[in-house]
Image (spheres, rainbow, N blue to C red):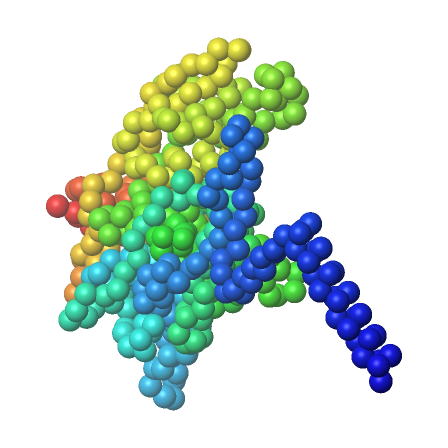
Length: 468
């Protein structure tokens, strides 16, 4: 026992000696426990004074932006009236999508392709309320349409933001209201600007899309693209997909172009489409090399009656700027010109033989006709028009505007015109679509001569009336 006790005393003494030596040579140590919920700091050393600035990498919070957008994004349903010999007329659903309330009075922007086959329209708000909507106007060249609902209170609305201020890599949200699911919100970044994907038909179509990777699926067309402040910066329009579902590429009409279209439809009933009067193409590689990596678009032809010709623009000029904006590609120039109205003056900067030249150009309409605000011209005359389908254009061999309805006891009814006429000419001006008819009639007084054809009849038909 004495031997065991001695060993224990020796072990205890050794332990005390070890602790004394550790405290003398190493000193006390601190143990710091960090809360797992504390924010993680990411710092970068300041090389000048070895101080770490108070920088932090944060995840983007989209709560505020979503709350701004969701109440103003609606579901849009288009219906087609179906006539029957045996039963009363009925309606069947033709398409559906999303829309954005952009005014407390109930104006709603959506895509033209969402409503183009419909004759009546129903709107469901995010809170479940339903309304019948009136079609106020369309612009197939930008794939936009304007609807309006009526109510006894102010509607929730989204405010327009500046799509020009968007930067590649910036966060955006795509907000839709598909299939009455109330709302969907997806996040992504701006992948590119000024994209043309050749989905819109027509010589005067405008494609300068904002490309994002925010998920946009069928039913979200016509919905809102918003920035992190909850402002409307685009109308979601299309996706590129091989699977039929979202594959990472979505495209939106820029809000700055959308705002101009909406203002025209409210004020005039049609879009006042201004044109420079030039044909353009992207710069060939040899010209880019010759001018030391110049950016711009090449003028390949100038129309003699146009504002561009009168201002002195010529074939082979390189357009590098419009007012204070630089021109980098064809889509960008088309978008900028589309924001103006016939009669507006713009400053065009061109490069010609190593010299930059500035030219003031008065923009014309495509028919060189200037329209005064008169948005109710078709209603006042008493007929309703639709743009021709590709099949109709192929059948008659030309473009025009289809008369879909004539009001009884109206000015048009007194001419003996009947439903089904395809208007091809008014006062010796060729008609390509409904906008042409509105533009020509809106700027005309005195005798009006309408020439057209019927799909199943031979020859041309002429109808005349007076506009005071």
